[in-house]
Length: 339
Image (tube, rainbow, N blue to C red; front, side, top):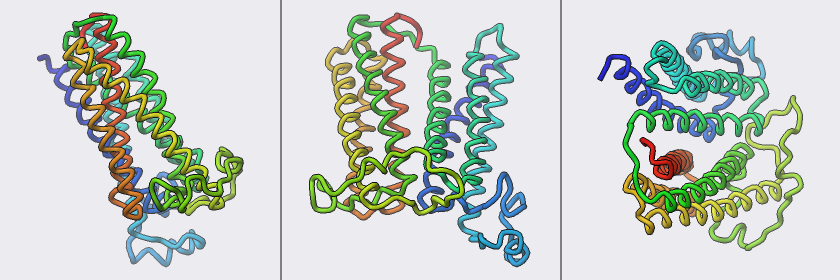
């Protein structure tokens, strides 16, 4: 293996692992209401690192309405440090893609697309703070974080160069079903982000019912207003209980649709047994789906502990990666191309 190829593989793997960590860290920061742990950007109270106890009095004069909470400030800054490191890795991949463009070791549009998304993510990170965790921005931040993870995963899979063979018609059917499942999963992830950023998780503290009823008092009209203007501090949520219930119920219904479509795609792949390339990915989809549903139900039954709430985001990321692996494997088999 040539030196540039080794560097690309190493950086792609490092970026993939770090991006997964950043996504989970972002969920942890959000769930511990540390998104405004630093009221400015990109620094923290005017410093590269959260200020020490000796600086608290001085910084409280600069930010009188935001007394420092060192724990929240450090959580927010660790997330920023990790995201910045990820950005450097993506830039390095883009440079290598350009330098080795004649060898076609890595897709140049994919590599530079990653850089573009990272820059946009930085902008969303800034707006998350300056617009006081506006749900639309924070949900977008989550979605583009998972988009970055997906592209790094797609890049990593493209570096494997495994040959795919099998029944093309069966593979095409699996690809189509998986694409439908992927769309349902993306919508469900967006609903999950909207649920979390509007603090609607605990609106339904029981399962399978919600507040002791199958259809409790809900306000769908107010639940999905995407933009409510600036100058509002959204930390802790601003919606009424019925609106939060509506969001939570929609998220549960989305989970049913996503679970059914993904199960159909995975079971079809396993039963057809058209190619071992993507049958293993189909089993991974089922395992990740069961894990995610288990985490979600247990989270409600146990009163939404922080560990399970954070794991729910990690589970969504793992499910997304397994679905993408199935999609890519089925697509490669349908075209009889290297995986």
